Image (cartoon, rainbow, N blue to C red):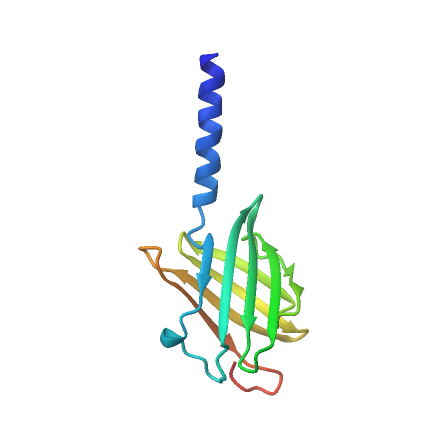
Length: 144
């Protein structure tokens, strides 16, 4: 009986550790006052939800654009540099993420075949701020 309790306690501890392993897990709402969009326009709102999955994360993004249209996209990703497809009507088709450390993830995002951008996701050390920087060019060579 004592062995069963120890195993159960270990399994519970491991499940909490696995969930806490990614500092992005949780719901993040865009703070427009502290955000920059170049080129614009900025969206009206954006909410990102990161949930732990069996081999990585489930990421759901809901954006209300400047005109009031809503975009929802979802992807399940692991940090193995493989390409993972998005579901929904967001701007990206695929993501290829790589974990750099406990708080940083670098990713290549595919917009269209032949058009990719780089994304850096950083969670602050205190876990209170998520910063995403996207750099690249569109099909006409204009900065994104």
